[in-house]
Length: 137
Image 1 (cartoon, rainbow, N blue to C red):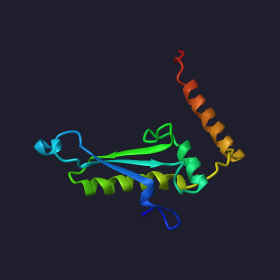
Image 2: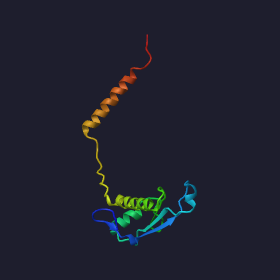
Image 3: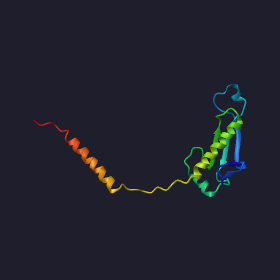
Image 4: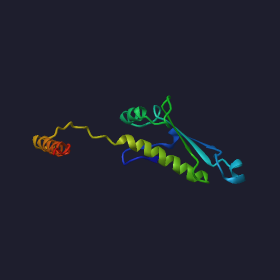
């Protein structure tokens, strides 16, 4: 069970894990051991609430493919267990990201006093610049 928050958790049967060989340096070991983890999580087939599913599918994230599957490749660590934990943490972070409801923006206007102050400063600056003209003898 992957716990996202106090109210949301995902059963591990909904998460598909594959061990693959990691890329990059690692000496002779990298060619023999499958230490990287390929995590796949199907958003549509999951037990997440519908609101979160819609928000996840609307996310502009390169890890979510057009079929609505989150694909995470974890290969940062040398052991499979650490990479597995890393993949779970990254999945939980993506889902936590959509649980936060953004505040609605309220359009505001500057006050009359703020407008007056701005105009005063502009006029003052204009007068200073006007005094920079050529000196007449």
